[in-house]
Image (cartoon, rainbow over the protein chains, first blue to last red):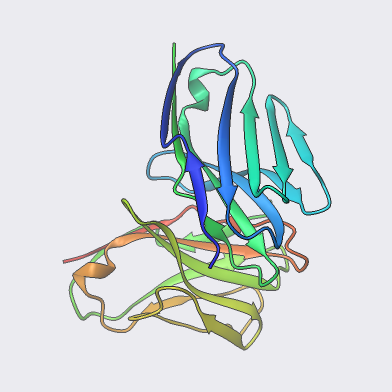
Length: 111
Length: 112
């Protein structure tokens, strides 16, 4: 069974720092990987989708990479802002398309 | 606007009173699913549907029912809600090919 781990569980940084969130998965036979953002008590907002044939995706200050062979993905956030404070979730999409979520990284960006 | 719409957003009900949470998507997605999110347990899949009239159990299906009579709608039915079904529920949809999921805004259900 696929297991997805996100490290660290929580992270607090001063505004302006660049940071990296990590996601690892046990079964490399994935189809795609998707990063989400969740604000407290709110829904999931899709940030980036990396298809299995890709190694990275970029959107604004966000860059996500995928290394299927090592079972890892990273989300890089440049020049962090207080508005980036949220929980970040990675989700692995296998061939059967049932998402498996990590437990998330709770990010706090201090002004 | 492409979206997944859940209703209601908030619901407080009593044990045993049947309820339905609706989910509708306007993107013509084949795949739809329901999740619940609980503190310390993360997001867990309840049921999913690959297409109209095709549904299957996820990881935590007990106490729930679903139906997929139309492509756009995928309601979640709690025939006899119990307090352990108090949770935050999300509906999601995806096109074929695993080209990413779109989630609804969530339904916070409290069963007393």
